Structure formats: structure tokens, C-alpha cells
Length: 485
Image 1 (spheres, rainbow, N blue to C red):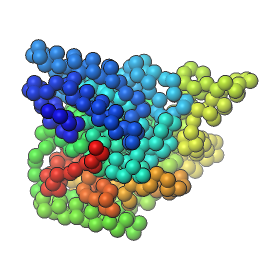
Image 2: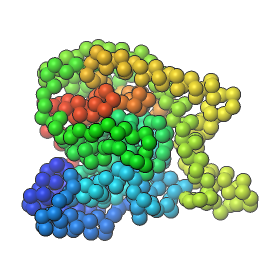
Image 3: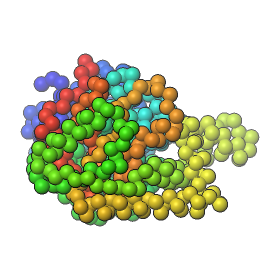
Image 4: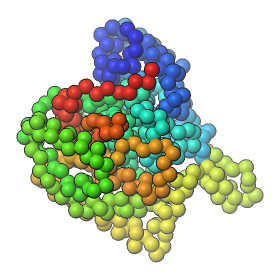
């Protein structure tokens, strides 16, 4: 069989387990695909070809000998460049970490390896996950596979593009304010941000510790469920992870959603939404009605404060987390040094990009004496109000339906200001502030570009999101990814 890359992760796994195909052949096919098209897309910053082929041979040998294999046996998977992998270069797409090699595996990466997934490489991203275009990467720009003149979204733009370009079957991203869901929407793939604490952050290079969460991006909801089973669960190395039992998320597939209540927040359907995007969103809502869901209008009154709240809290945490990159212990060190002050200042000034420096400065400002109470403390109080909005809403409804973004992917050369880019996250940020799960699912095309819908769930309600997302995919019909051959 040729063109394994066109299959889903679930299909590949089943064929490998049945002995119909070999993992080694699938991995070879994927690398041929990457070599053929990634010079146009730019999804990857580092590849593990030799290691991946060796690991695939081991999986094939296990299956041949009748040994037990993991849940992702032989499936090629990509990880974002902010997840540490032992023996592999991990840079967070920043000059300051351009020579850093991982000395251990992030827990999510370790779980993938234990599940016999084959990690093929690391994907491009906005530097330290700060951005919504993947243009702040130190390494390269990533292009949207649907239109090479447009952004893939960010910060997990390389991860989403790798799935849309069919260069991997599953790609792990991280989501601090929408960094899985927005690029998934822009690239026409499925992306899930789990509940805060569902997946360990150990080994994830921190941006904002109270907001960051690792999650999967894939071609369909079934593959999301398959991966979530593997990466979820408690971890002795991360005290913020819940010890709550992890259900089998694949058991939520194929169930109907008749009688489920979907809340539609009036604050998310604003005048600024692109007219053609709005049409796709409305048609998707009608499909949920066809499936028997009850649609009710709700209010999340503090939504308008989400963006300013986020851009106080996230930079504050970032300024603290990024203090460790100082040119002393590891990473880039400036050669333009006369004294210890130069060591710190020049290493950080030369090592960090403009967007990272901007957020460090904002964060340091709001945490400084005299401004902590006025900004950071107040933002934390508003964050609690935003969370309470969701708590009240979930007393009335099972999940919440919203757009992912007011627009489709914009051009790479659009000269958007930092504030304009921050406002692009208006529909995704609240879920991170509240710590709830959210999923983006492709619903249709507007101006020949993908449009995603967002479903937000109760804390640890990933199963219900998978149930509803799978039902929607079935009524939506086949979703074709762009032809790049």
C-alpha cells in the first residue's frame, strides 16, 4: 500500500497491530512526505529520522513476536519544540536555547514513548509560545498548508500545519491562551486543550504556569481520544496534575447527543466576526440542532475583560519563568561581555526576540512595587469572576458553543500591531483563565479557508466534548485536507 500518510492514526494503528503493514514502512513514508513538501510548509525545526526508524523496527519486532505493545504502537507523532525530549535538541524556537539538548523526557513525551508511538521530530512555534502566527520563531516561518501566503496560527502553528499537510498523524501542542485551538481552526484540523491539570506539564518549557496545558492535534476526534488516553493522568513530578481517574475517551465515540444542552454566549457573537465565518458557525449550530441538541442563549458577562486580564497574568508569570535564562547555566551566552552585568543584560537582549522581551517587560512592570495591587492582584480577582461565569453557565448547560476566531487565517505579510494580534485570541483566552477544556473542530470553509467551531466543557469534561465533536463530524461529512502533491 502507498500513501500511508493519508490515513488516520487510528487506521494506521489497527493495520500495524493486525500485521497488515509495518511501522517501519509507515515511518519511511512519512519522512518521504516531509522531504517532499516541508520545504514549502516549514512545519518542523528538527527531525529524528534515524532514531524514529530504529524505534519503528523495535515495535515491528514486538508485534512479530506476539509481545504486548502500547496504545499508539508504531504511529508517527510530532511534538512541539517546547517539550523536552532526552537526547534531542529542544529550543522553544528561541536563540537563547539554540544549543540546548534535553537531558530527560517531558512526562507527555515519556508517555508517548511508553505507548510505542514513534516521535518523528519537533515542530515550529512562536518563541516560548508567545504569539498567534508562528512568525516569532527564531528558526523560520511556517506557512498554512491551505494557502502558503497565510499564517498557520500560533503558537502551535508548526504542530497544526504538520497535521494539515499530512506529515504526522498526531502532533502535541501547548495551549496558554488558545495556542492549540486557534491554529487548529486556521489549518482545518482538530485540536483539544484539556482541563488544567489533566495532562502533566513536567518537561514543558513554561510560559505561564497557571495557564499552560499540553494537548493533541489530529485529523479527527477519534485520533484525539486515542492520544488523550495516553498523555492524561497523574504525575509525581507535577503537583498541579489531578489524580482523578482517566476514563477511556474512545468510549465516548459513536454516542448520540440528543437532549444535550448547548449554551451559546451572546458575548461571543460580536459585530467584528467575519460575515462568511459567521455563516459557517450558524450552519454548524443548525447541525447540532439536527442531532437533537437543545440550543440556549447564555451570558458570560465578564468576557470583555478576558483579554486585558490574560495580558496582565500571562506576562507576569512569563517574566518570572524566563528569569532562569540568564546566560550562566545553559543556553546562549553573549560574547560581548565586560562584567557580570553585561553577561545578564547582553545574553538576554541578544537571546530573546522582540515579542518575548515585550512580554517580559509588561510582566515585570505589573509585578513591580506600587503596581502589583493595581494590576496583577486585580487581574487575579477578575480571573475568578470569569471562572464564576462559567460555573454558573454549566449549571444550565452541558457545554458551550462558540467561534474559535473572528476571522480565517490572515496573510503572512499583514502588518498587524501587537494589540491587534492579542485581540485575535478573544474567544479562546477565557477557557485558559477558567481552566476548562476546549476543542476546535473544522466546520467548513469561508473564502476558501477553514473555519473551526469551539466547544467548551465542564472541568474534566473532555469525554463529552469528544462525544459531541464525533457526532458533529459524522453529520458534517468527510473533511478533505489540502492537496499539496
